[in-house]
Image 1 (cartoon, rainbow, N blue to C red):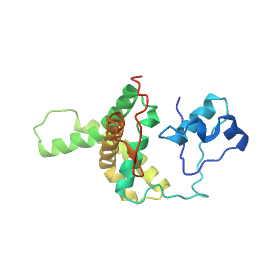
Image 2: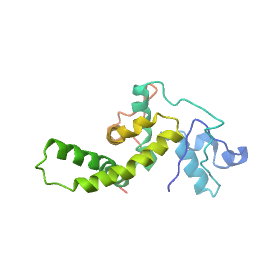
Image 3: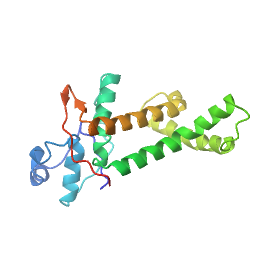
Image 4: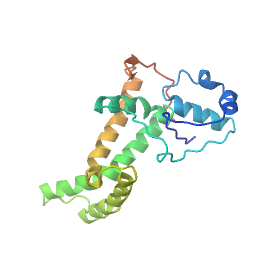
Length: 187
């Protein structure tokens, strides 16, 4: 079930919260915000993810270490600990956003290289850049950062793979405490 939530600010009626059993119903879940939403949807309750950025502000992380730990904690659980869909999606994301710049870079470094078409790679980048620009603009980031989207995606895919690795190995942590190893599934 595809669901999304941002745990820093969630609103719902008390009756709905009590109907799903409150936090006790998902206290052992690493990504408790997603667990709550999935439980609400499974019980037939209505859930909406809306943009409240004009009314609510929060800072999820204070530094790069917290970003790494936070996303490492949440990315694999976001796929409900399903290995094959997780790996497929992140490999696809890596291929779509990282391969075109890599092709152009390789072609610039080795002009005689006869790999995939640099024109197709340039076209893929031309489509991606406006999407990243709009996203960065919408969330208030400097627009020039859109030019670094390949680096952003390489780091994001690496953090995603780290998320799966630390979860499967039982080394996932959050705010200084070690998290348990959940029930992992292939599909």
